[in-house]
Length: 422
Figure (tube, rainbow, N blue to C red):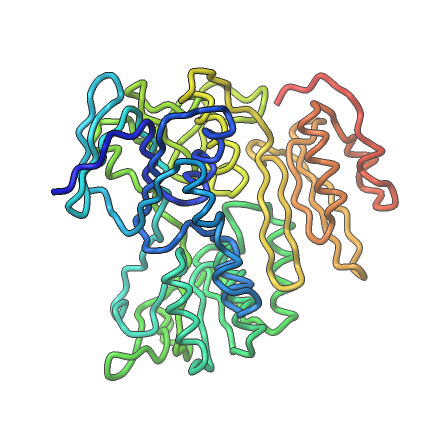
């Protein structure tokens, strides 16, 4: 087994949060060695475009790469590709050794940026050629290799990734059906009004969407997929299926270390896990709600680029002994064909909404209120609404509901200072 020299910080996970942590550590003046270790045999890359521009051949793989090889060398960041860590031995002071692929990686401090993996659909026929998932670059490359021979495609799951992929396939000329188990689209992320808007828009473009879908099995011949059979006996033709039914946080290493786990690795407001030394960031971390004024015991796990970046910055401060609390307004986005959805804030506990709509410009915004106070917004093709709400939430301002409904009024001009309890 090969043993490497001890590194100051070992970051397991060369994804958005892992890369940002390495960059942020150097920005703070941290001078010890950093090892950034990734399971994939690719240079660290951006994932959001995999289901959109990359799948449609609008950009090539080089456009996805975060940083050049020269950057890592010049900043004394050792990039290790294609290694899966199988075991970690850790001391009470935070130091230890990680083992994987016949190698040992000694460290003074450990950071887990291990992300999440696709939730698999357990149905008969799931191993047929043509049943796929879309989470990483290899998934996207495999999909691109299949698409040319596909006429009919099915996407299982009406969340962000599923709808983005469905739009990409539709734009490539495929017959596309979306099968959503729940009663509406994007059920975990948006309210009923926004879900209904996307349903109408996608159907009007020719994407077949089936809600409350109950699947029985994948069907095929000679090992190749030919369709999906529903419980009512309907068979939907498909030479390609993309399953996008959510993800499972990768907590296996945390379990080996004895860390607290609850829908992810439980961390405090400084990104520190229950042992007091291990850092956990990004999609895998279960964090205190970062919105100022949130209940002390309210916890969430956020799957977004913005969270990966901001949480990594907080972790960097913790690692250099300058801890700062993670506080801010979460935001998300999803590009689905010509519809750009931007979300500011979290809708937890909302009790009323205000809709702003301009059908001619395909602009649509839903503002969420708890009592008289705005707490979040879904904005489609309405970037000024999104920026206004995000700014208001960040500045502890309110946008009065009775004025917000007037679409002729820019929301930015309606924001007022107010002591708001959120």
